[in-house]
Image (cartoon, rainbow, N blue to C red; front, top):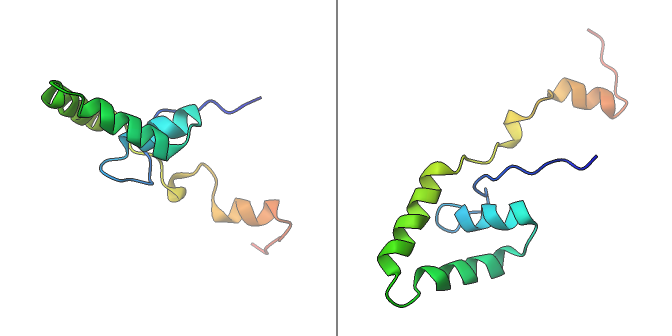
Length: 87
C-alpha cells in the first residue's frame, strides 16, 4: 500500500517552504513549482493578493516532521539491521 503524503512545508526552503512542500506533495520538480509560483505571485496587477495568499499558506501549512520526530527509536533501528544489544 502506498504511503499517503501529507501537505507540509518543505525542509528544503527558499523562503518558507510553501512551494517546496507543494512540489513534494505532488512529486513534482521543486524548481519548476518555485518558478511558476513566483510568476503567479508577480502576475501583473495581483502582486499584493499573491503575497497575501503566500503568507497565509505559510502560516497554515504545518512544518515537515524532522528526522527526530519519527515513530521508532534508534534502538528499534538497530534491531532491524540485525544488531542485537544486551539489555
